[in-house]
Amino acid sequence: MRISARADYAVRAVLELAVQQEDRPVKAEDVATIQDIPHKFLEGILGDLRRGGIVESRRGGGGGYRLAREASAITVADVIRAVDGPIVSVRGERPTGLVYTGTAGPLLPLWVALRANVRRILEGVTIADLAAGTLPDPVRDLAAEPAAWENPRAARPGGGNRPV
Image 1 (tube, rainbow, N blue to C red):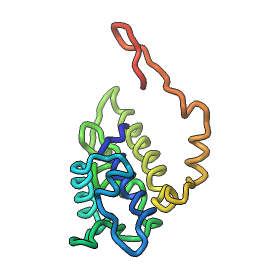
Image 2 (image 1 turned 45 degrees about the vertical axis):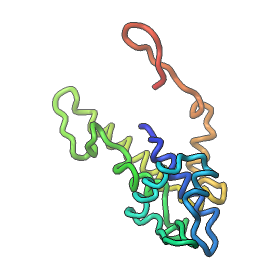
Image 3 (image 1 turned 180 degrees about the vertical axis):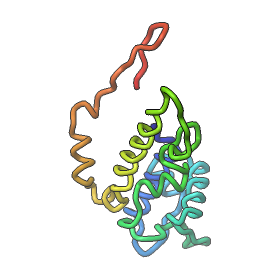
């Protein structure tokens, strides 16, 4: 699974809005500067987040962006889905829409299990958790495992190694 730059920027922008907003909207330029996100790219992301019901915007001198609902009601999965679509896909399709036959049959439950695990993590962490600097225990426990920080290598045909 890859987290796209778009998804990473979206989560960072929503987190910044959660931390910065009080009773006033936050300007996209401020979020872009603080989070070191290209402003034009961020504007497109904020548009997707607005259409996805994650943020709302107000035009004018006192305008900007704010969360559309409480940070505790927005998960990291919600943000990623708003900008990138389904969390886990195989060849652009949801795993549940795939059909495998013969020796490839065990791949389907593997992809479904992968999706379930990724969803369990990303749906279990809210923007409020991140804003408070805390993570749920299961996430903290996984991240505390030394192997989680290692980059295993697999042999590639023809020599050389690449991370997996």
